[in-house]
Image (spheres, rainbow, N blue to C red):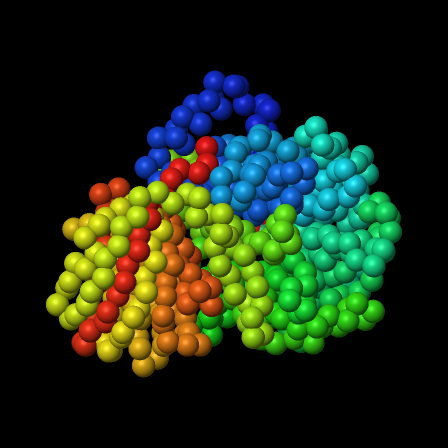
Length: 494
Ligand code: FRU
């Protein structure tokens, strides 16, 4: 992993000579891993999606950004806009770390439309001379003309008594005449939780209590909470850090998941089911949701993880966001499907069907590096079948389905250059039902797999060579009848 000194990490973009910044942009553009239809930074490092909202006839999506290199340094908010959630345009910097309260980073937060404005409520990260952290919750206003003004004073100063300085990432909503915020927190006994604040005017906030779940000792910090109601169920998303692996679960360095249930808005006690991971792949963290213009709940995540080295670090940039997913709850289960507007990116379509058997069958005659592939599993007598993507002589990313166990495994051992600091080469998940369908989005350096119409999702970055284009199928024993529908996908972002 690349190490930068503190001084380097806190260098301001504004202090960099323009031609050096232009060089960074050029260097980033040269990377062979740049994506075609995912949001990615023009230079430097992207992490959490922020401020996601539909405002003034457009979607506004911001992200955590350190402009100067592939490390977690001084964070800005970078702004992108979209008419349809399929194509995004870069709109420049939205928030700079330029006040006393956010001097060491404009950290994560959310967006809320209030009258004719978009309120951006976020954490200002301040460090004292002794390098002690003081988190401030801050508010800024984006007006219809696109200008953004910050309030001079924080809306919440420092952590609440009983909590450490890990106190950040406000997600705000409005309900029954009040504004509420959930904030990710660490108790002084070093366990993670979520706290709730209330306000009548967004300026004056009162601490209410913790949002009480059954998970009282579940990791040392919970980042990026999100709360919403969906199909008459309350959903709490959060990112606990410090959870041990358990069977197929929690293999990534930090987790991102949800509990479903009912939240009592008087006591802020939640009755709920088990914590479930949102994504069962390698690269997913810090998601955020909003309502689309038709009232559907849409989620976007960071396709990356903290404390992990990525092959593009050498090229001076890192990470991208996932494609947007529409959430629903059906039969008490959360489903995630790619938003429908992504269909507008579809170009040429090719189909193929037939049996895959033990002998390697190159069932699909087509190849590619950027596509959406729908695999219908029409008849499966195999013990285990394999679908390999981005195949070259030396490379392959393998999806395995074991019928008896209903287990899907995603293996990136042969996917080319690998991230550093990651445990294991594969991720697995057991399905509720037999595997019927995969909907797979392949971009230059990522694969997102939606399983059985959004029942489960697996996301991974891959740093495969560009001549790795093949698609291959085979079985361990027995045969499987597949139908493949493959759409080329068009470039969607700058
Ligand atoms: C999650 C996170 C947030 C924080 C932000 C800083 O990835 O650590 O808790 O606000 O990133 O960039």
